[in-house]
Length: 111
Length: 115
Image (cartoon, rainbow over all chains, first blue to last red; front, top):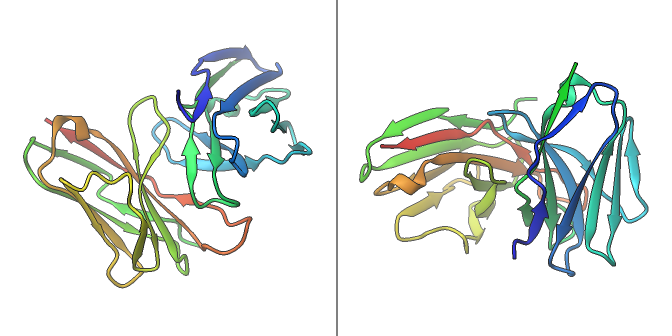
C-alpha cells in the first residue's frame, strides 16, 4: 500500500465549477500535511499547509481528518489557471523535513 | 531573491555513461534535498543534507548514485553508470531548516534521458 494515495484523475471541469480532491495516508504517526501544485514540466510549489481545524486561502479550502487519515482540497470558482497537478504531501515530522508525496491529481479546467 | 538553481536543465546520455547534476540552493538555506520524479509520480526523496552532512540517504541507491555537498552550499548528484530506468526528472530543493513553518522550495529540475 502506498503511503499517500490520490486519484490521478484527470478531473475535467468547466470554469466556475467547484472541484474537490481527496487523499488518504497510511501512517497514523504523520504530523504535517500539505498540498503542492505542479504545473506541466515545472517544479512543485507549496499551495497550502493543512491543519486539523481546516484552513482557507481565497478560493482554496483544505481539510484534515486525522481519525480517517484523510486530507481534502476544495477549489471554488475554478479558473483556467488552476489547471495543474495537485500533490498531496505528508510528513512524519513536524514541518517540512521528511515529505512523502502522493502521485498527484491532475485538474483540467476548460472554458 | 534567487530561487534554487539547477543545471543542466536537460541531459541525454547513453546507458552505462556517467552523469552529474548540480544544484545551488537559496542563499542561507542549510537544508538541501535531492528528489527523483518519474513520469506520473510524485517526487521521491533520495538524500537530505543538513549543511554538509547527509542526514538521510536511506533511499539513495548507493551502488550507482553518489552525492556531495562539500562546503555546505551547492551540491552535486552523480550516477555512474546510468541505466535506462534512471530516466526521470531530478529535483533539488532547499529550506532554511528552521522552525515548523519552514518551506521547501524546489528548483526547476534536470530532465535525464538515458538511451
